[in-house]
Length: 249
Length: 249
Image 1 (cartoon, rainbow over the protein chains, first blue to last red):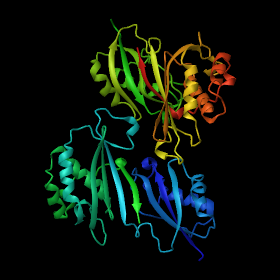
Image 2: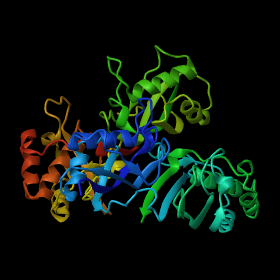
Image 3: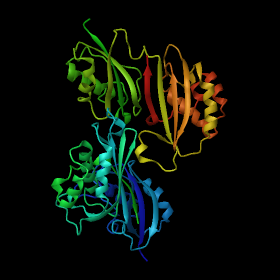
Image 4: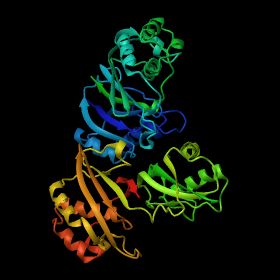
């Protein structure tokens, strides 16, 4: 076999990126800095194409994003993290590398993804968390939010929670976990599914927040889900509270 | 009385600042952005002069820095934090304000300061901590570091730990706490004294790290302290691990 398929687990601070995906204009993207680092190591430019499990938006972070790419390089797999990290900026890191079969595709082969959304509820802003939590100093009924979460669990069409105008084959996803945990002044919402529609994680959070505020009842969420109408759901929560935690295959 | 003396407690992320103190050239400083915000509120420019408890270096952070300034503004004291925060960039925040007597001076009146130094010892770099901890993935004997700390406690001339060329009236300071605590992969060194010489906190950390590495014995630290010779002490630990936690009066 000429080409090897390499799978990488990567972390990045999304603050200074215009999202994961390389863009036509010269915006700074995670894909862009990764492909540049790979080019420096392999000399491969035209043939190398990077695929990510999830194309995160601008300011969204990742702790365990997964990508794969095909290369002719003979560099032993255990050397890839250090070689890449030496060529990556301070806000991206490769945490592990694995050689995988030629059929492995970071996006299509993903069986489960976990996102976490962090909300900071302290009375005063914590400037050190400004890029990593959504500052929300208003009163929230967390028990009501937990109740609404139960309606969302399971296999449904999540069309009401997809960015309007999304074109996908199916809006059906299986949400296997939607968990709210309080850590001091932080509320962390962990979401696990076999896949997420575009902006689905942030739209779920925005809707659950309306329940926490008392502007929606928990059971309204079931109605919104069934309506398959984006206009009934809450606003898209801001990107900088969201972390892609892990991808399972 | 014409002028009121206002004391503020402020927090800042030092990452994008060239230190606290306003500089001749147009560098971005905490004092600069604070004075600009005060000018917008008071219209006072020439008369307003800000004094800080500690003039932190570039990339050093503060959770509880204290400053004071004199103003003719009649704005009620409880309105100052919100008024200032509306005019400050995202990496500085005023957390409280108090009207104090005309004799209060943020630096000279300080009785005790507490600094904390954060060291990240995980095998892999944590990119989210890159600006807030010193990444130090090498083996450290924390018990030996704790032993060395005991020699430093109390009232001594700390000249060996002051930046060389410092000109101060006295190098004597009273170090009342020097504590090492492990939090997961982090080692936090908390230092409390009636005052710190220029770069003293970072030089203490740099020296204690040499003990942790086994390059100095704990009792060597006593010899270095007595020598009053900067050349015997360890290197200055990098600024971005250091936080000014609080100032007491």
